[in-house]
Length: 493
Ligand code: AMP
Ligand code: MG
Figure 1: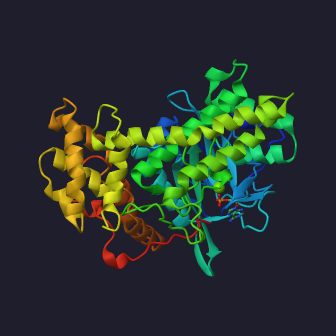
Figure 2: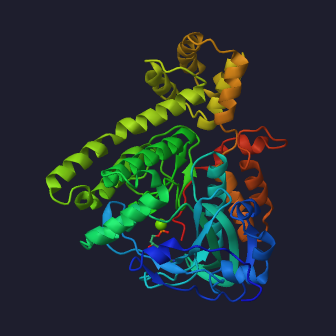
Figure 3: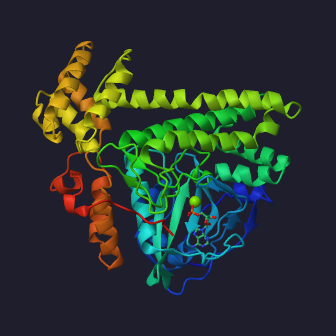
């Protein structure tokens, strides 16, 4: 214990929410070793990175040794998984180690995933393996660099123990994850499903204090809590769609109250714009397809609203349902506003004009069946704004499809008194050159599993500055080669 890194924990969940978790400790890993440490994030949290990288740090980050001041616990939560309700999920292979206040004064959870069985494990082994751990590490960093709210990896730690997955041994690993909190829609559902209204209220009060303290004194604070969660989620899903991200497993237990992206399992980025795009091997019906993400979040938020009925009006549930329904019904319009504003920014449009929604939609329609790289398209549009139409036209199998749209776009831009160079620069600030391309992620994880961390490190390096042209990084900007085929990911367990 003596040489464990000193961390100034302040564990509000353990302190304030007794009965919402089971105090628990991780399983001792046989030979823990920190494989990758996020030193920038460690600094942000005020942690001593060099102490985390030691043997004592590895023992702590794998869950087997509890540092001074931590109060490790397994959180209770329920969830709708692919539409079916599981009244008890909970941290079956994870622990909330504790909370720290970061350099900006924000409270952050330090959470371990793959730290061993807990009372919530059911049939599972409580473990995680290297590939999915590094996948979550990489995607969290990529999303963060793209400016999209996300949990982030603090460390990936090898346990030194092989774990059997799909009949073959894989290196066991633990992800140390940092989040604004681990409150989920499913946390509310766990207590609401048991009819424990007092606990739902306590949870809502906790969520308000932690994420929306400015509404704590409002008489309509529970309805307002719902509005705030709705709007942070509408903004989040718009950001996903604008950048071409498919989460892949938008169960209500993977929907965070904080508005951060959480739980990177079978996620991926699209190449061509395709609302039907599905990458997860288990999503056979396309419930969580790329274009289905806004309606699914609407559905998930409806499940959250159901847990808040008795809080919104304890005396008249019809009235509460009416008020909540009004707020739920506003989701699609709010989502569309966020998305449209995002598209304006991507297209370098400064003013709001009536035809903008059609202009944005027409661009996507023009790409249909043309195998246009979605990410590349917006950088090519910046080139067009600078006067070179060739890169954009070259993306289209039938460039005439593009020309018609480009005419509208030029007329729309002429309605604003903005210099082309300024407009193009503004576009380049929001349209990434580099995203986690499926074939590159795949190759980096395969190499890591074979003991070569080079491709993983290089990919993270490039993705950490997604808007800036980098030297010798052309391959990172290109879509998958034709022979890569249709990309399928398997649930990250
Ligand atoms: P996830 O798919 O990671 O969002 O997890 C969904 C639920 O399954 C959570 O309750 C997890 O704790 C649980 N779970 C996933 N994998 C395992 C595992 N290997 N052992 C025990 N529980 C697990
Ligand atoms: Mg989950």
